[in-house]
Image 1 (tube, rainbow, N blue to C red):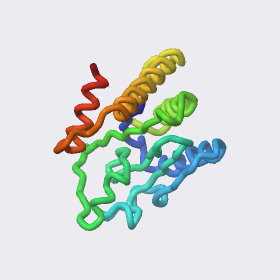
Image 2: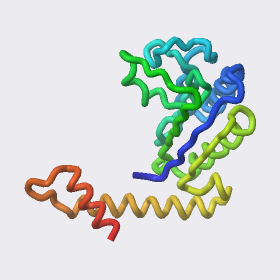
Image 3: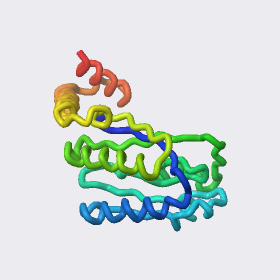
Image 4: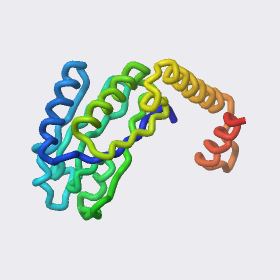
Length: 192
């Protein structure tokens, strides 16, 4: 739970990966954000495995109090989250041509300024490096470029998180109730 944005896209040309990685690394360094570079910046590395052999290329950046933002590319050039595929190390998956993934980044706890910076970064990357970039922004900043709209959305999500936390504090788990049943019951109370 928490305000997030979701994205998908594809690198325009595999030869631009090194340039994208370098530019994003410079931005992360200038903002003192953590970053990890994967692979050698070329899609020529692929032989079926992912994580251990780093058979993909890209970068992840992690702003303070934010989930990592992955700009990593599969063999077909689509963005993907390498953590999602760490479970396929022993039996690598062959992704079909045209396979796409949607990645998500929760910015709720990072705050409005980090959210704005990331959306602006994606605007830039979309113009220079990415094809078919699709952003679904729960803050509505991508669509509107309106800070007041973004502020309202953050307040709304803050309220939802606080309501849910209060509901958890004042609702006891019932005898025989599973954790899933308990969460669903608490969420129903918050919704009312």
